[in-house]
Image (cartoon, rainbow, N blue to C red; front, side, top):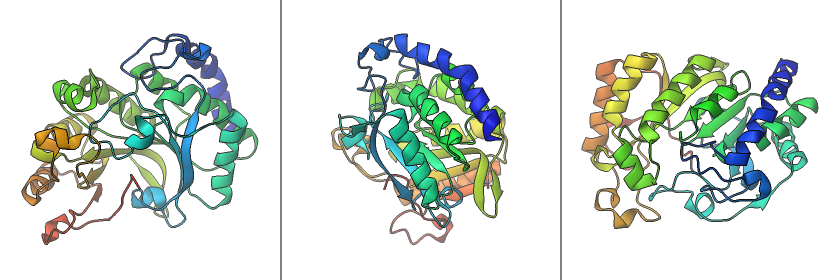
Length: 314
């Protein structure tokens, strides 16, 4: 199986590297030559920069399991969310540049620690170099699933390139409106493209498959509920039910709280209310979308909000 993945990486890697010459890995398509050291809107040139890596115990239960998810946080991001909890390394230069040997070594170390998967967080801007390192890790015996954990601003051609290589997709569907995406995340074209890439992810991997409670393949969609439904979660749920089906695995998150620049934007200067979150839960039930997890709302006495507790941003 890993031989097949190596072969698929070999088939796409040269073409993916060439995309860095006029970068279009994310929807912004800033067009700089990152192979020559030019920095994109993501803040970086081509070589990967890692902020941290560890056995993450706070992901969705099927991802973290009982030994943790082997999470590698990459620095930089094509989105500029005013409420980003990871802004200290996603929107500023922080972290360590690593070679493909270093990155492959991290993967192998995480597997040796007993992690259930290798979880690439914010991988978009470094996808070609990640595949280069992943190939090396496979050559050295890596044998656990990979998770592509993205904010959902990847270009459709990039996601198509990953077909047969990535085991588990974990994208955000952050907005249903391009206007909201541009205002609060400086991410023009987000909503239209996001829906297309999530459909492609579903085509590639299907619904989530678990073995002994652990994810091995498939799609998990994250939905961060924002105040005043800025996220358009209700509309997104209708899209999911209509285009992806009732069995798609959803991770509904209540954890939003104002950080970074959020206090400068009135609707985002507070947490989600019980009523707002219950409206989303009600919509889930109306549409028959029951697969996945519903994060409990902090300090809520409402039993309908109880669910698996996790914090993907720890």
